[in-house]
Image (cartoon, rainbow, N blue to C red; front, side, top):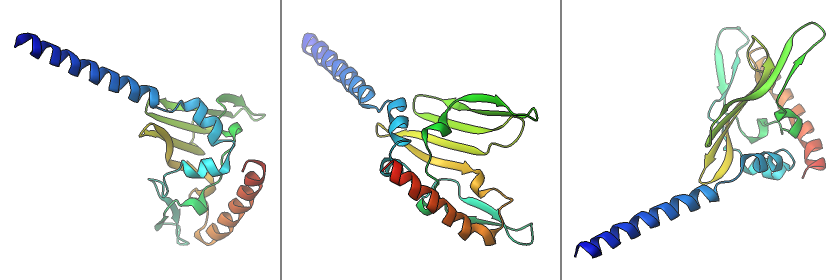
Length: 171
């Protein structure tokens, strides 16, 4: 009886180990995902969880009241591979522009870009969900507090034009 119990326990442990190994092996490689994400508009759209977690927050004309808008597909600016280049650049005035992954965990990654010692102008959050990478949140300077609400439709229109050009080059 003990032998049967031992064999059963051993079998259960082997099954769990095999299942965990297969799950780990089935997870999408982040670098391969990022290459495809930045080179195909249709793939990029398919890997963004709209609406994003954080809505777009703009100030009303009074300069004090905040109004939020869901960050939906029509407001997304497609991102090319150059956006995710990790670098540190000093400009002519001495400002330092930094772009890098600030969080680089196996299931969660965050990329930020902007001038050192100031707010990030871009922040993109990636999460591994069911073995696939998705963008779940984003902040972009396209929609910072300096943008008047009255100019939001024009900004969305400009993004749509830029996205169309990206889609033609990277369907």
